[in-house]
Image (tube, rainbow, N blue to C red):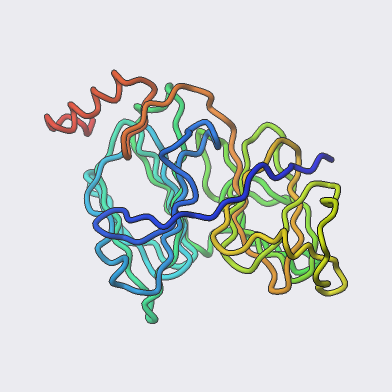
Length: 300
């Protein structure tokens, strides 16, 4: 077993998107090879309706897949093909934009005004960029949850994990998308396919992601439930952890436990021409998409 090293830890950056939605961006619009096949990851968590209700009005997508995971509140959506619906707490929508779609996403808070969700963009390979758009809407009750003997909980949204398979399928990046909760003081190792790019995103509590060997010279400041924890190495709320190569990821939970998304996917390794929500392989393809948006032939 080879534990994946931590290549980088960084905080998500406050960003304004849509018609005025305040969110935090963990990565996106910089180096598309960094986490290939993934292009962008946003955390749109907020407890103030004034900072999210303007939503994401009508906008186009082509050449990518968008994955929306809601934890609190709702996201109402509609598109140019007549599809409409709403995602509630725990629900997931995997949208394959393919050849092109116009849609809108409008967040609504729960009874306390809370809105919390994530959106991930995954690239499509050249051979699938102009496929017909499709949706996979998954209710929370259809997402398998595994509870291990030590209290670790894993929701399997996409991919195979510990003998269970997530309900979303047929995705180009062949991803694994897990929602992981590790109790206080527990040290846990999770398998990750060697040939996939992988990252974690912490959104509750804190934990230390480390190599097989403990870092030298780090002062141990606390013990949690009999387990040594490198408190200076803990990654807390809104932290992105980017991993190197290996076949597993290890985390040591802090004193409040840790909850994070663990996501991996097979690299596409193709040229990327990117403008906003449209991602193609060449500038010529990108210019064609923009012409079609202007002349009304974008939807196929």
